[in-house]
Length: 387
Image (tube, rainbow, N blue to C red; front, side, top):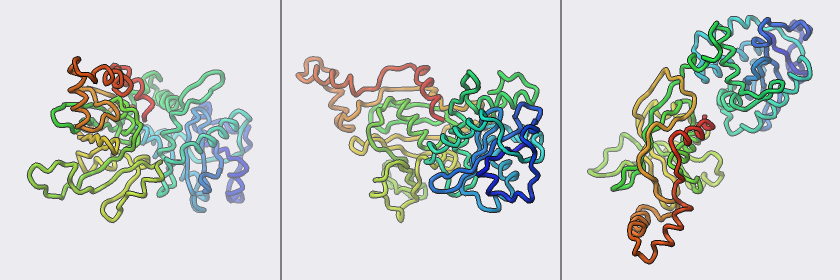
């Protein structure tokens, strides 16, 4: 493994204990697949180490590294590779074979202008994803996932660094690179999301990787139901130790966990952390919640109060699926800003009666507020952006 470091990175290292190799001698025999460029940057006023694979441009980010992390850079970079590749769904045996092929680290300065420019671009792009930073960990696997789906220029072509990585791993295993999706082992959840609306059966069945965050799930719900994302939202996990009275709906149970919009600064004003655990949707994975429960709730629009029940129906531990997928759909959601369940019933009464004096105006209004007609295939093309 060649770790080709910028001057900023080298200045932080104990050069007396590091054997440096001239950059022209850094040939790993695999076109740079076992070589990484390394830079030290400032991220959120904290230090961060950004590593970029020479061949695939796949990134690894180490946040707030301590002195001992820098002193054992090789081990930390390999830990980062192991964590990020595993989160991508690369099987453990393939990850370990890759690391074995890398061998021990040899250090040098950065290579030519092209790779250095790519490294600088990767470092710049990291700054766009600071909301994904995990303050409790040095290894930032979520940023690796996000940046791996960032399109990168390779010569005169463009590609995703993650897909380029998977193809190269196939080649390493002696497999046809076009079969790269078949090597993936990604835990997926089958969820049924239903609007809790008496007298109506409106639901979507989706397949989604368990590594996705609740921010991703929010966007998937918006996309699959055709909501416009005009209003506030939150997820809640009811307290399953509560013993409800007969006919008490689950949304009226005490809250165990409240998962709120991590980008809304005003959200802190109405939270009661003494009453329940508070988490943020952009930092909480589905796996963290559904490992302990089969059900949670999603509220959209704190005026109309559209409550959705989310039920974990099945866990597929060895799926090849990397993106959320809409599997089945039933019913059309209420129009935006219709006035809650009461307003929805009034809306249905009017549009079912062409003789009503309000019929024409309500039908015209509904054209702007109803969900757009789309096929499952069209929705799934949009969902490929949510990972």
